[in-house]
Length: 324
Length: 227
Image 1 (tube, rainbow over the protein chains, first blue to last red):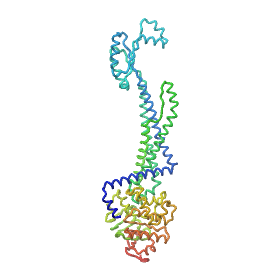
Image 2: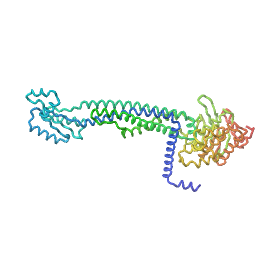
Image 3: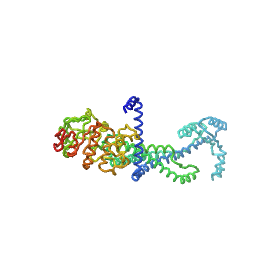
């Protein structure tokens, strides 16, 4: 025995620290598993709490996912943005070829398509009833048009806008037009909806915090005697608090998982009608499932909120319990 | 080991539970504290693990003044003191084994998987090794009290205090419990037991302190009928 003790004290402090750390993590793991088992034992009431948390998290998450998808859709439409350059009527052929050669050398520009006044007129005649009326005119009233598609790297709204400004300054150009105002309005709407989702999310996150806090408060009350005993035998505040923190974390994690599940169920159910609607617009847009980023966000935010809610509840209520 | 110097305790409502109490208990001594209910026995015991703090006077444990023990250091103090209650205060949703293991886990100095040896040694000492997997509700009063004692000694504290540990037990069981305390005392643990059962403690041939209305009356070796 004494030999044993000597050996122990002769070991370096590092070994002692290692041992303590090992014990520390083992105790954390012990609490982790026992709180999970406790949660399982009173499944009924805990399921209700988890549902409330899950639904509260699911609502803003759904909005977030949905808006993200629509935003992507808008961006993909943006990619097909074209600038129409209406050229001045009396532009000599030489100036025209000079302009196209120069524009072709701009790195912002992906491709050009020239539509001559004659082509435009032919097309117009085909698609419009006014074709016969045009025949009365002694001169083709339509200008030449160059359709400019921005290069891939210059398809952001800002880049397209600056390209548009540059093109407008050309003397050969009568009018440069980017018909994307509706897209900007859509962006505006999405921004508004995103802001609303963020605010709603904030409010619901507060609700989750209070639900978890209240659940933990009730758990503390129902285990009043146990807390007293643990304090009597020398349990530190941290030791007493630990199971409740883990409890909150479990609630948050399961709430987050449930929210993830709910959002997926919602997306799967909406996918078919959305796909059909998109087809009408000639788009292959579909909702798909919750993206990885949102999944991670839910699975991290849930436990974090649980921990925070439990922390708030334990801070106030555990101190109040002292053996008497 | 335990020293009280002019300790008084006045509660917020003006009630004075202890008045100017002074005594000293040596290392490895076993002392009984007696008196009628309301005499201040519980209050006195509660001051040792700082469940209560004195309104006046000083207490030292192992030469350490308790007045200097800050709130955050109270748990560490309590880990060095084994406390036994009249109602044993076991956790009913945990097995006997888990109840006894609790002080070891609380200390943070033991790996949860490696406490088994000490838990079983403590249970063996109180004769309940066979009941380690039972829940406290299936135990008799005497058995529950013995689990409480195993929990109090598992951490090998230097001081054991017990508040009416035999209050709910018949005389034969009470004798058994007392002789358990005697065994711990014999291996060097300082033991302080509050009990109003003079018949029981009188035959133990130990030092007896008597309290009446918060004052310490007698503090000597007393035999049956003397105090």
